[in-house]
Image (cartoon, rainbow, N blue to C red; front, side, top):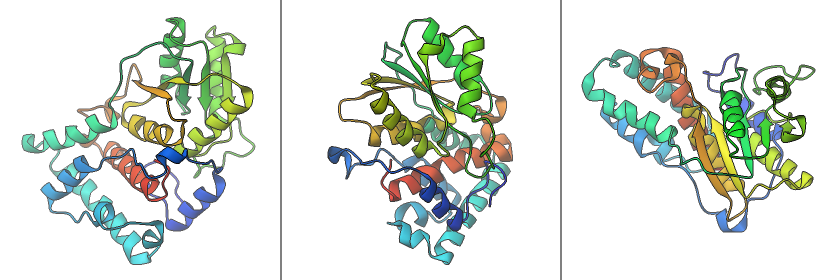
Length: 277
């Protein structure tokens, strides 16, 4: 079992994660569509002459379950982490590294919406951005989602979403403007449980502003794009601030930043294989 966000799960943990998430039907029109593109990380792997088979030759979860395949995948990410760290000051590598971050952090023009969606976290950074947008009148509701990471023992503890909801109220946001989804443990679980909650409560969600950290924005958007009803408008909004450790020019200069950004591509690939993104 992992003990930190930058570690990759074992395949057994991956199975436990899938078992913990709720199920939700994919809109029929989107069953065969994926909202991912791996060209940026494939270019980087090619530049370092590292095998890209995890992204190009693995076609289903059954293959991932094979011990040698999963071991090769983990070795690929470890090797890539080392090579990025060794060459982080090489100017010729910066365009390739920036391309990874730019892909993950694409944002959209901010327009009025039915709802502000906040992916839960341990800091208030994402919530602060949502509060600013709420005060600017961009949406009448804020939905905060997330109990906490699967690798943490969060049962019996206050969920991240509940703590952030209390924080929002302390900052002057009306209680009836806030919705809380406090059971999800992963990004796809955030999306599936939240969409189900919105349907059950009858809250309008045809236009959603997705508030997330820049490096995590693509994965959240990909799952919403896959799971939301056809015709839903999704607008990506990155947080107003980001620490240097996870910034566009800083992530590849520290191991935690490197592993965090690479793990986003791992998550996107696994989600493609299980058809949730």
